[in-house]
Length: 74
Image 1: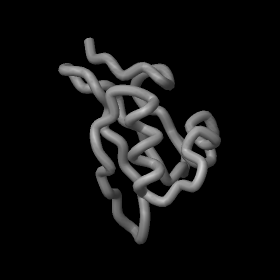
Image 2: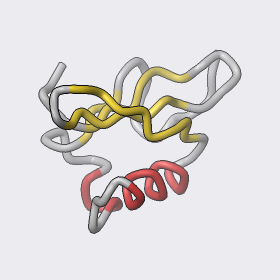
Image 3: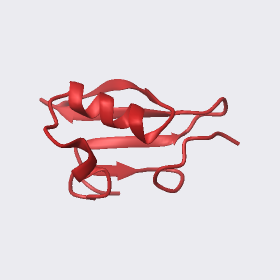
């Protein structure tokens, strides 16, 4: 586990992954991403200037419970 402020949580059974950002001492849900495009849209809406630049940077974003860029459930 890292101290990355953005977390892409494990895939949900129906598919998609919850995306949260830790800010001001709390976690805020940005939405459920079903693709890298969804993730980029959520990050841009949260104020990330270049979302594509951080999706593989562990200082900014942590992928949990499955490989990065996989959004399907079991």
